Image 1 (spheres, one colour):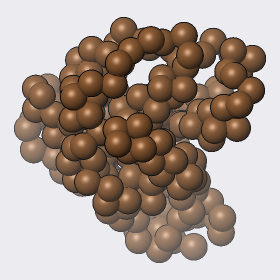
Image 2 (cartoon, rainbow, N blue to C red):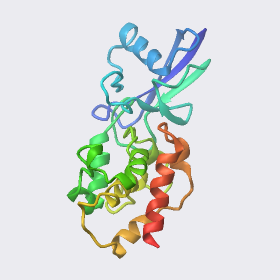
Image 3 (cartoon, rainbow, N blue to C red):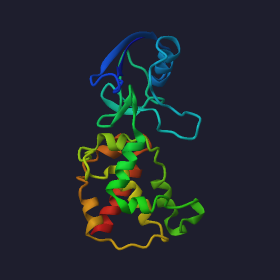
Image 4 (cartoon, rainbow, N blue to C red):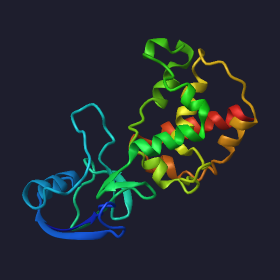
Length: 223
């Protein structure tokens, strides 16, 4: 099968405007978008920048937009026509690579409470047995940033919303008995900014239940 492939290209150090490279590539049935990107890099243009970490126990690195829909490139099967772009609303380092570190640092900056308590549990053995199953459901995050990219409330202004990923981290910490805090108006405000539009958990490649459950837990705590 021949694929008409368009790839977003941008080097902010050279230009402020993105262009699209177009390729026609042969692909096998069941091949993935990540496989196509690797073919381009290996056989056509080695300067193409994209990120993946398959087999490195760090899933979520290959998140991109394919035909306008966020996904993991290693899971998305090829179609006759494909346009690949970086995640929407994210700062681009080059081509398909977004600045993940900046996104996470901005999130923590908006919520000093999250920065103070970066790790909820060292091991699952630290989780109280009464909350183990709930915690497991909240710990499947790939940190692919897809939820942040589809959230209509997230803005990368100085005091923007912490977004679905921030709410997930908050819910993990709410379950941690070692963290002592009072649920005050500041935390209420963080949760209240979520409009519960369902966009994040419908887009989440790890499954709907994790983000839905974390937001529901925080909404219950807020009340």
